[in-house]
Image 1 (cartoon, one colour):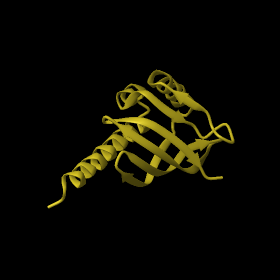
Image 2 (tube, one colour):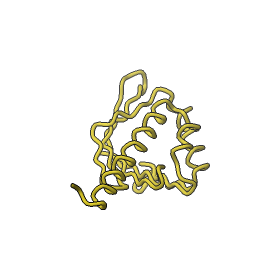
Image 3 (cartoon, helix red, strand yellow):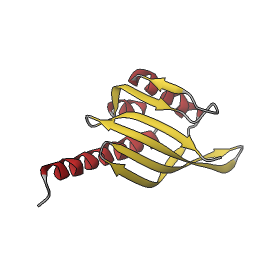
Length: 130
């Protein structure tokens, strides 16, 4: 029988995976209000641009407003998770971002590093290839 700490770690990882999956589902629906429910008050988002370090957005309201505007500019954009690796309160998601650009299908590959706390996303740090 697993020790209590092993059980707690397993529950933590399951909770983190659920949070990340629900967050990504809301994101792909472009539902900023649903995203807000999955973010801590002090959440942090680091975008992939501008180079070299990206823009840092702090606070749930500011992050939600950032994505609300982003959804309007990118109405057909979706993120497909290629792989999700969870360890405790952390998750790494390898993704493909797809949209139509200049009338042609276009994509970009990258990684998000998530931190979950109290059943919500506390940080989403984004990185891209190329």
